[in-house]
Image (cartoon, rainbow, N blue to C red; front, side, top):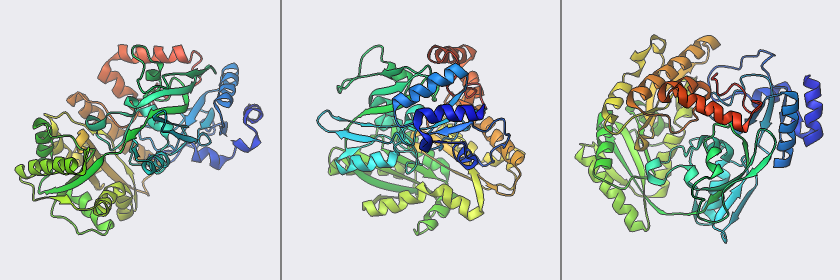
Length: 469
């Protein structure tokens, strides 16, 4: 069967763009989880294919439907909910060749393929004075298609600029049955009422494969930067609550690192180690003066909550050094402990933020498996999001690593259920399927299954992901 699949797909995309190499399988099946791939031969992919057009993807889907072979789209594999790991043997459909980018200033939008990296789009837009409202921590390698599937903006605060879906004007999508669909508009006004775009941005990859993304151009705005240090994490939480309650303009970025991760990150970036935990942010404005005024107002609110220090960051260069300390914090921690990382996404409500912070400072008490494991607390606190991150010893066996990851997801589930929240950065299925069912109810879960059946009656696309890994 495997050879028959290889020959069929080769006939669609050409021999140069299909592989049955073992190392290609591993490269296109692993993700950021610390445990290695289960090398069960029955679960390894049949082939990895890299189509170059919507027409080729359509042909692959039509053949896969005839032969009942599941298809798993693959971007950069940076997701943290397990969906990048195909739960059974099938065709891995890499979007890496669909990496085009066109910026049309006359129309006021850009179009790109799903395989282009976020960083490539961001740099190209910056050169023309625009801003990309997508900024994951893995922006150097994360794909735009992955951002659409999760409707995630990463670090950027939803309350400040919204989600990527708010800027998507239209898509080209290949349905699991093979039809090619156009959605949305070429105008700057998105369709009112029924807009099929909504079924594909944030679809967890379940309803179709996006092959072309059209997003509105957003003019770049002025930024001003600030940082504050607190003796205790609860002071940071109180400051963020005050920021919202006193109606300060929410910043674009607002990042938190506890005392330990601040010390590691700043030292690794060649910066003096500060006196406590840190919170740093980028304020926006239509002018440099407005941005600076918004920054100063936030700093004043920090001082009201007894910040040890609260100060403006004087230059972009200084900001980038501090930002780098946060951006590479996971790599810094893994290097420090010579281990592998894993961490959940826990989201608080505004009234519960201080209590959530206190609870997370005692994270290692939640399960005996964390005994002796270094755990650091940081996150996108402007979006009320935390990532308690464990650094696992490399010499742990696979099963123990799996148990720790499962413990983290159980904690994530329990806390997000208790706060009435939901992950806003990572997709919802794969390892979060059980959470979705408990959070929204069995009826909601069955509705999602029903929607998938409408688009994918033969369950060809991402088979098994919706059921959980």
